[in-house]
Length: 108
Length: 122
Picture (cartoon, rainbow over the protein chains, first blue to last red):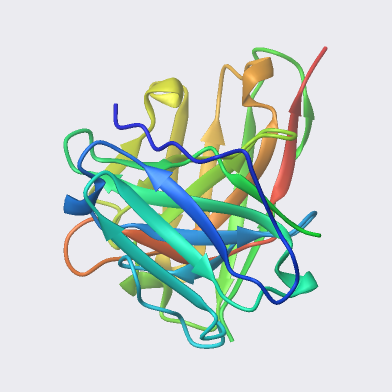
């Protein structure tokens, strides 16, 4: 089955830019979606179809996808952005929805 | 406002059964694919199953095939997950989620419930 690989953790200082990667075989040919999950809370969609942003999500959140890597970029990071972030795709070959292992974003 | 409220979780012995429910409101339930997604304690997210708007298509992750059954009642705006032959590795918070797609089966999940905890232990 299709595997998505994320770094376990990313650290960034407030006001800087955080980049969280999601690796997969030819992931650029798939649509990638990203979720934010804070402790004790349900996941929240922050990016869909690689780079679209749901209403209510700040413009500081953006996404890109090419080749074997998709990236979630958070600009001007704030303390409130500290959370786990998961990428997700639909694997058409298996008809499964697949999540990455998650990345813990720490704001220093 | 879209709301998804899960219920039915609890402590069950290995080999036992449990039925989860998800009450939906704030949108036309019968127009959307719906999914169950779970998260074991301290672990990541795992999609479990989804069901088409009219219940005619259902898909499952391999680890639950033959043991779990997803269903829905559009008249009651409700989604269900019947879980049989439960194992310790099924211990998780189970989330109900609304699927979105450009066409066909689901691509992503735009709304999630708060989850219900299922603990499988003797």
